[in-house]
Amino acid sequence: MLNIVVMVSGGGTNLQAVIDAINKGKITNTTITGVISSKPDVYALTRAKENDIPCCSISKKSYMDAESYHQALLKALSNYQPDLIVLAGYLPIVPVVLIEKYRNKIINIHPSLIPSFCGTGCYGIHVHEAVLARGVKITGATVHFVDEGTDTGPILLQKAVMVENGDTPQELQQRVMEEAEWILLPKAIDAIANNRVVHENKAVWIAE
Image 1: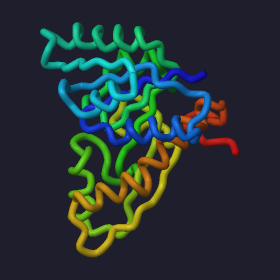
Image 2: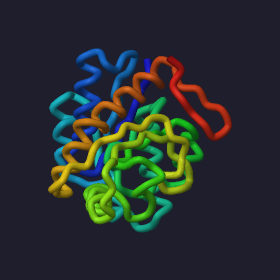
Image 3: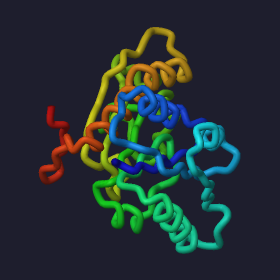
């Protein structure tokens, strides 16, 4: 059984997609042992509580310095005993100490086709605003493993989504979630849970 901890910062739509996929058997051999939010009072925590999933909020603002904040994160993760950490709309930069401890055990869902529209400052609705401003016709989402860079880790899965004439950033964001993010993230977790992910140097892929 794969123990996963989902880290969030907002409404938790990707968290809900994972919960639903587990309940429907689309993700097998997996249980969510905890949810960690970077902000208090976000709806993602309500989703966790409604599904009887242990959860907590760890906000950087609540700690005197980076070291105490990092230690609080590590302690919370240790309590939930994750085999895999899933960043599902988690906005803070992941501390290096966390990446080192959970090397190749952290995945992130990003709302674009990396390497396009990613990196520092390119997250959430800002991604979709940038896509529309550039005038590209195809966007999408990416699941990748997390390393010390920003959106630079090995890519596991990608799915394209068409940009439609007249799209607003909010409309495009919703379509990318529905047509890509909510499909890719459960698929990635299920593949990891069932030992179908192959790592070779800096490349990863799913063995069919």
